[in-house]
Amino acid sequence: MSAAIRQALASDVDGLVALENAVFAADRLSRRSFQRLVASPSAAVIVAIEGEAIAGCAIVLFRAGSRSARLYSISVAPGMSGAGTGRALLASVVAAAMERGATDLRLEVREDNPRAIALYERNGFVPTGRRPGYYADGVAAVRYKRLVAGTATRMQREARDPKSGKRTPS
Image 1 (cartoon, rainbow, N blue to C red):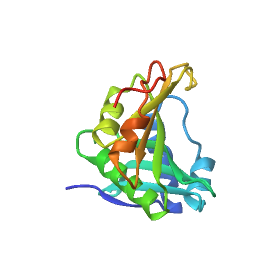
Image 2: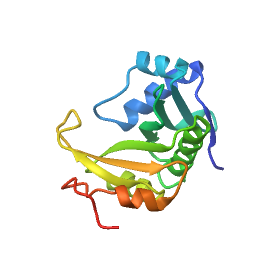
Image 3: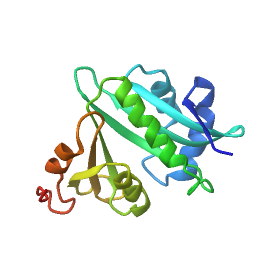
């Protein structure tokens, strides 16, 4: 059985907090943050539901006047990895960005998270830089970007090496 994907509801907040606490050791969103995000017109909180439980969550942020969307967070419940939940959430994030008229989607990912990096790269994201000490525990972030509408060629021209920040050859 595959997870059902839908917009989060106010009634999902307890499950979202539980998922956040199960997945992340630091840099966690609070109950209040989830309440604000679920209600915010400038955010899309997307959940994957398996049975009665939240199997995953993705949060994408939109800023007025900007054509870029930002994937703020994506998480999959322990025991659900490998079931395609992350891929389904990511596809829903891209669709939400398209619906809102975004031209690109950006994100940061822990440089020590090869599984997430592989997911993003398999789904058309290219590295655009690196941010040292980005996370609370001092780990660097690799910045990624993906066009939502347009050609992959432009993304390849803008690709940057995550370590040096220099443009990579096309």
